[in-house]
Image (cartoon, rainbow, N blue to C red; front, top):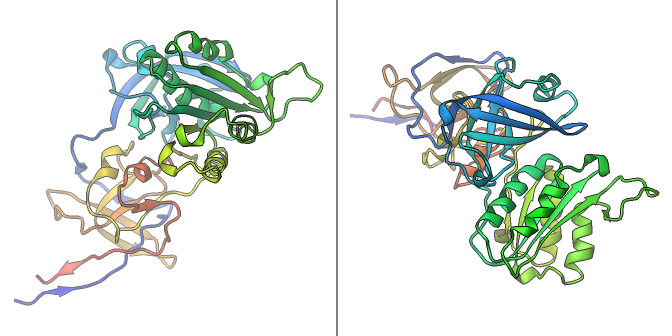
Length: 379
């Protein structure tokens, strides 16, 4: 008996916009951590000129078993793809089966356009929970830094911390452009009344573009610089006994992490999930690092964003494939030969797969040149 092993390197990069995923029975791993549920929009409220509080309720008061800090995706019939948003409240603050989201309107954003009309009463699909962002179990000071709609996940975390009476100080910094962009200031400030006795909770809004002649008496400048100059350098926050929680635009998260790293805070003491929008690059799977643990498949929010492939064919000059054949237990091998393929057209840039992978096999920074061992024949 002879065997021949061919080393073939199929592309795991960006599929052509006309890529066909051959129809087959769904063969995804069972017991996904992400549940896809029908829901209805129960309210849509303006928080600022460009930020909404959207509340949805699952059919039959179902639950997702989420924790504060996680996020989900929302999919309306009128839109081609879901969009990822952090849960804006702790489960302890929500009614059964309800989920709240702070949604900022983005120019040209599909979901932003969708919300230009009041959608109260309309059906929507909620997938979740996703992400690993959550409060840790230490007793060290909490440094929470949020920007824009990143208010959501941090708000949920501090609500849960207040509910659980955690015995630790918390400084919640929120970066916005101007006073008109602030929301829930009174509600968040009142969390101090629920905080554990003997410990501090402080909410610190910081404005980067507020007119100099306005009546604003609070912090000014970039929120990460304000934190550095007024709390870190002054010793209010001790770098040897703090944990940092970030949610907001990736540049803000990167800037905050840099400030803390330069002060000697380890990356293990910083917590955040990053998810992007359609303008960002899709993650790429380096199959040479993949160990078939299925963690990425357990957290994907849509059926076809990550495909377990039985074969790839119709290779183009640019290295992309015209045809992607899914593993079909009835007709193809149950093994996918260490080849998982991210379909850029289906990917929503939630980066849940990036966060879930324990072996750094999935990243938007990975080289598009595919790396995989494939096509075992003549065995």
